Image 1 (spheres, rainbow over the protein chains, first blue to last red):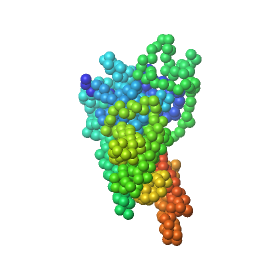
Image 2 (image 1 turned 60 degrees about the vertical axis):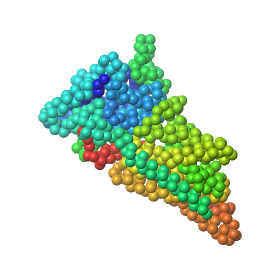
Image 3 (image 1 turned 90 degrees about the vertical axis):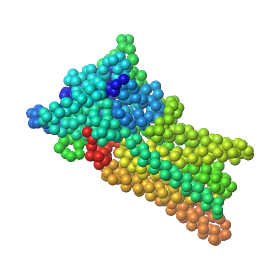
Image 4 (image 1 turned 30 degrees about the vertical axis):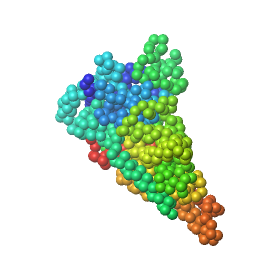
Length: 261
Length: 366
């Protein structure tokens, strides 16, 4: 099975939220309530246990002087689980509920998860969350059930502008590089690929769901240098080992002192 | 059905017509009346020309979902682990003089293991599935390693308490179990620091080298204070007091070091400067200093009583001061765990803490 993922070209996203609706509908996710957040058109705010696609809206000055009469345009992007090559959630899960599938996606098995919540603080992108009333952690499955039948994920199917493209990763990366050159030449020199190249994002090993962004990652609520937390493993375990040895030494010293007294 | 979504199932699926077989169809939902439309008061949107933008101040990461039981476990597990270490050391080098301490420390460690496990199970989203923690051993996950450490320590301490001190083979098995527990005790006291460091929470990951030793020192101090109260009178109490003083002094020094480390990117250490976490943090330092002062006063009182009457001064005002010192020391250690926990929660909610820490590290990735 080849590596599969998403290439999200945010420069053609129209903010229709068909991806949010398709995801909710296909996966039979519950509604999160009718709340108008007063944050531009973003009423979902962030990914969560029952929101696996989230469209973000950030107003800014239109590049190249275009845009509406007030010179403003939106940065719109459909955010999703990145299915990282080096996934913080997967490395953190103590029950083995989070696994890597044959499509190279990251999948949470709901019959194993016991809701310890460690994955929630291990995801550099704030994707996975524990649902309070259910107790377990949930996130985008890359439509694992659809992939088994040779279908593309619901969000990619629904996207009217093909902002969300699904397919083999090497094909997507090739398309992304072509599109990036086109966008940069067309008057958006600060456009860049986010997560397409493992060398430029060593903390995650590259993202199986990567993006073409038109501006800085912070404006899309993406971290500029995400790292799976286990990059610190050597330093922190080593430091703990030294401290434990120190404690043992101190205890032995105290016992010897008393024995000699 | 009144309205687009029914009262209890907010999926909009009429069970007579549709089958609930989606990936999230098994997601349990709390019984809630259907929501009406809620609105939030609009506020000024960020100006994008500023050099330090965020996405409406929404954090790019999720805050921890853990409740009070988790910092409580850090404290209880730390006491258990350090008590095991002390018990093992005395069993090896002072088995007769500190016999009472060896036994009491094992009992304290077992009680800590049991209470700690209960606290952790309580915090799970699906407590009935607590045994799933032992399905796999995942070395990349401090929580997985820690679950096995706790299970092993509990088993070893149980054997040590039940069999230790008995004649013959049983006693020797109990002794071996006690030494095994002692070997696991140090990692048990320190792995919780690694657990916090292995997260994306800025306050916890920024000090990833300094946090585990801080937790070990705090565990040593609190185990010492607890055993100074609980151990039978005699040389054992003296050993426990000395561990308490050493551990608490190390806790103060290492705490300062951790605070300086996380403060390298000022925004990250913000929770330690103002707010509830800051009050807990300062409070833990004051309590620790108070405990050391009390221990010092108790020693002086004992010396004065001994020189006056020729007896060892373990009665009277010296004992009261010692008890107060122990209480302060235990409270200080608990406050320290709470301060780190609450500080982490605050730091996770602060978008700029994450962005500044990452920008300082590498200048960003694309």
